[in-house]
Amino acid sequence: MKNTLIKLSAFSLVCLVGLSACDYKNKDGVAENEIDQAVVNAETEMYKDETSAGISDKTGVKVEDAMITTKIKAAFLAESAISSMDINVTTIDGVVMLTGSADSLASSQKATEVARQVAEVKQVNNQLVIN
Image 1 (tube, rainbow, N blue to C red):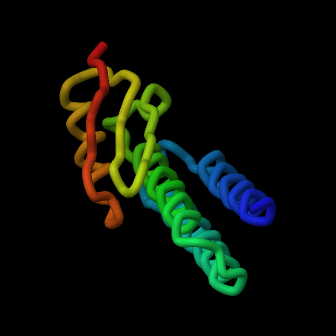
Image 2: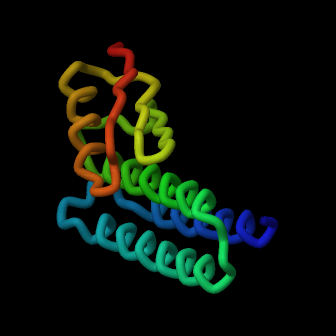
């Protein structure tokens, strides 16, 4: 269990470093591609280590939920129509909940649309408050 927490922490750190390196105004998608590649690399290592260690399915679901949340947050950063700093993303068993605030109804709807585009997302519950 401790080993899994260390790996999850390392994965989170990789994702945060990738997100912090993202150039919000980058129009050519280079930063977004770098984030996607960092997420894929971290995910591959996590699953490889889990398989060899025989980690339970429940832990795999938690890791997958963390991956979904990270992918959605990265997609929000790349989307100029969304003020991602005011949106919280929580994922449980593939169901995503968006909380916080959005500057407009269009921004709120765009956040839902972007979250739904992540392949592993089963459902999006938008609880955003319009400012």
